[in-house]
Length: 322
View: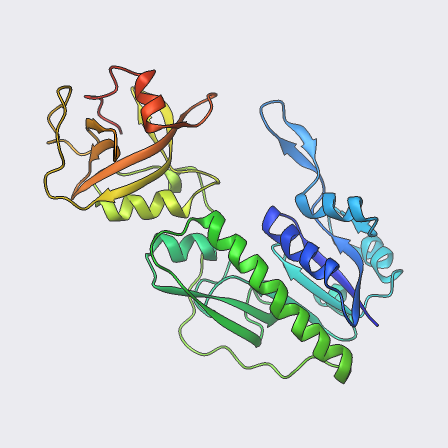
């Protein structure tokens, strides 16, 4: 029976862990490594990661060190792990840590490696309006996402995906791929041979608040992609009369001339909220094309659909968003 140390932190990683835990065959989850609790919400209350919560609920030995130093390595070594499985832990592992695992270490990366190495591959694929991405399982190397590819499954993109939905899909498919790899490892006593990454590498970076700000001079299709790329978190946003306004969902209006209402404003300036259409939503002029906003959220308020938002903001049509 192979003993697995699973490393990860966010909700998507917790989904992968739960599928691996519930469907274990030839291996067992001997321990879980996750980030320590961090401040969450308005009151900055410390909260455990989704992966840590799952481990605690299932009684799995849990490690949440600030640093992977000698003391934490000694603790982890005490559970006698054979292999490391990682998905979105968020830290690069050093050679001393990797030496704890006689069967090696593997990482689930939701991109078509070597494209989109780094921390935000799902967001990048949507933002760039790619037609495909991939679920990749690779060996862990000392450099970021440069390990050999053990398995890679193409995922077609149709332009409706959000970061949340695509990451959830990759978490589920990734768990199935890892199960198969662990089964092979249990039978053969080693991981299968990997393939060197081929092609030009590209890198993503940590997403900042400024990255998520909407530039209404962009095309409607580009803005739609940004909204989807940053949903549900950190969220695309704009300014409404100097106050932040999150745009949670929208779609490109394909008609050349959408119907105008009695309260319509001039749509000449990009960012102008020029009309509301019950079927489409709140219509906003962009640098090229029209975007129908269907869900919004003011700071400190709950998310609202277009109709409910307009009902509480009668003067919203005519506003120029920045």
